[in-house]
Image (cartoon, rainbow, N blue to C red; front, side):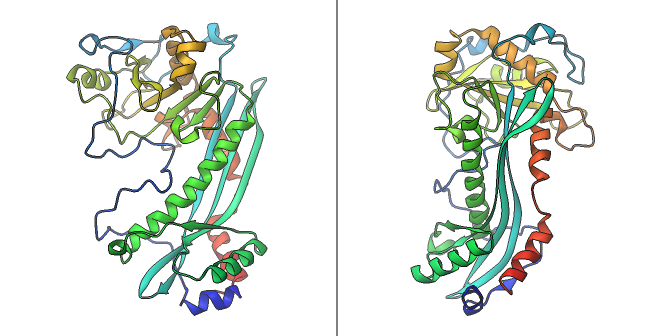
Length: 365
């Protein structure tokens, strides 16, 4: 039946290709969450930010959190016994591509095949070990074009072949001919499913001190914001929160390795956050080597009693955890335990093209 379904709608294989320009401006959508590892792309509205949370904007300056050389090397022996030192590390992975496209009423409908997964690593006497993991093979495409009985039959065939069907929301009619916009929706849908697995991984840590790769708002519901010692690490910055003050912006770009900005507050998300420079720029972008750290506001104010010394402690820890493998392209903004988590998860994945051939063979495409 899956063969009939794919053939009926003219399914064709797709080779891996370089993403093409969008023909129209992509619509803003809140249908599913975006990539949790990054700041959300900015829009025309300024974010709601309290820059005076730790000190007045006019008094902002870089704050050194430890002795640190230009590669970000610090000594934190005094923090080894800190009861909030993270021992668990959570990361997710989404690898795949558009494997085929269907012709439905003249609309090109991409079908994405991917593997998603999440893992929790635990520091066991200096050794990082997998504590929890989940991996799934998923197929995502717009299902609203088809009769419900057809979709259900195809879903059952996918399950029999080891895949899970992810339904993608229908875009507005004017965007349905733009293949890249629709393909972007399929990527976003699989990343959202990956994020759900990350939440399960975070829940598995059972309130142990933890670092998660990405924004905390993408993991809401997986931890208690009043009591959970969870630290979010945001590596890519598509949203600037400091533009209301020239002094705050200048402080960010003046950061040296081992220094941080003062703390500011995101009231709508109840997140306490700040920037830390992990290593030197090495001739890269002005803010390269800088990450943004997040902790829940209720946890910071109630459990930590608004102790900004804990902010320094977290900052020193991420400097110590920084990846020092120069062969890893994102090393200046990556933490070694998170890189190890990604590698551990990747070892459970099937190579992408092998997965594509398995899908083609399974469904005779």
